[in-house]
Length: 502
Image (cartoon, rainbow, N blue to C red):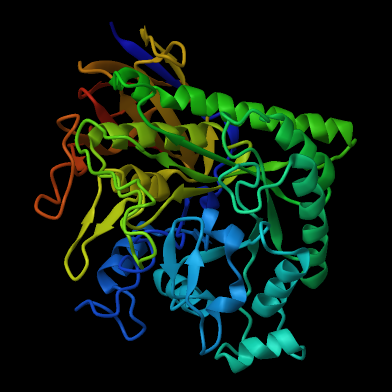
């Protein structure tokens, strides 16, 4: 049976913000130490940062990087990472040592080198509203106060000018250092936001929503927190990861995770809209999906060594934590999540793929050795490069497949439109080729590019075989027509670019 995909440039969902494609670096595992930072590596620069990693990040054009956590954040004192004499601390979140060799100045310098803005986070666990306000002052106030002048003495004369700030991390989770109830966090976050804005009125603030829909307090947490903070913040945060839903490792369920992701986003948006009505506000709360990815906490079909045990190599620096090796199935599931962000562009205005290097990440390194791009690197790169302009609501008419999340399309799509050009993303979630009639209802278009990611479902890239799963260019049709028929390979992610006939 054929699938028909309807694409109409009048069916606009909303603007796709570039900040949706941000990423995340946390002080955990080998993300920082022996990840982005390895002074003894042959490719390290004068500050100790790996140039091969910087090249791979720079090639992605990541707009924002969230820092320094994550669970690490709730026990972190930002003052430990400035100045010359830096203490070594126990990181209670991940059971490792924190040397503070990389801190605020070093990370902001790295971000400048890779062309990304910093999305700074403030500690709402052991930290106070005063600590948060003083961090804003240290980063953004020019001079003339004890704290801003301390920054200048530490080598940064001009302010860092950090625009976006997260007020804590996953404060509803019992795994969080100094976890809070919704009422406790809502009150603390409101007072923190007020103080931070009094220091710098131009910053954007992100408040913690439910860390996962699996929490018993979801979505009441979001409602209560927003009732305290709605007038003071710009974004409500949400986090979501996917793995195989059960021990059967049913790939159809896994590849249909986007169905659940879409429902989660829509529920969070509806909760925010309830508070908007409750407060008689004219502001529409934006959503920041500032942690999203595939994350296997148990052995996956392709590899068993996920390095998820926080008691492994305890109280060491750069211990192996959450080092998933991603196969094609993971890349297709992650691509489905990326398409869902596009399909919710009316509400999702910021996001962070978690994480960027080594820890559940698209970039993988070996200590003293090489670097490889994991399978998930490529859907992420394709989205950053082509998901621009506005998102269009696509309609897929065709057979559906059953999953634990309910029925969903065998072919899942998302489409971006900008200045007469279309970028259509299509995922074939089945083991058979799918034929699709693409119906551009308004005007004839000419195919200008076709790139697809496909192969054996559980193949993965590694240092020994870094290009098992990489995008392949396919010859693009040149004729301008309203209807285009394409064949999508089994288990594939395809980017199809079109241009309107002038």
